[in-house]
Length: 137
Image 1 (cartoon, rainbow, N blue to C red):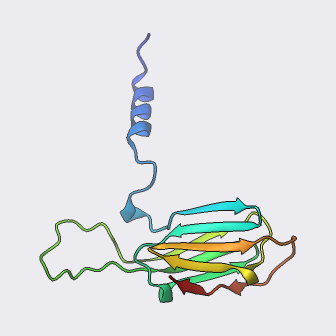
Image 2: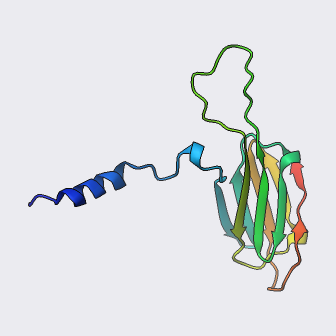
Image 3: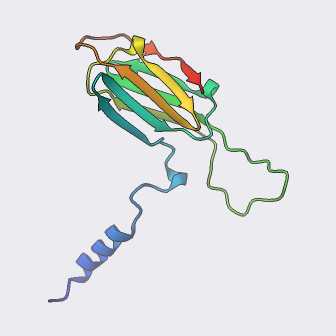
């Protein structure tokens, strides 16, 4: 086997050693899963540290928009921090809904830092923007 050129070796090492996801400090976009079930569409979103009252969900033109603020508690009363990675930050995430759904019948639940929004399927038709209330628990 021959030697790799230094530029190819360097590029390969860089590709294999960099993180798959951006560093937490540089990226406030919540991670989500979107999947289809026989009668609908389900979106689950990791939103640790978000208070339900600070969460807004809107559906408009086949796009689900989620926005709010993550709150990180800084006052432990027990000592000083040596490292801080959890930040307070506003987030805004838009995801396209790939199939026609009924936003009027959507259910949003927030439990243990995970938001789950379930949409029933409908035949394709245009919808106006609909805000979805979030239930705690």
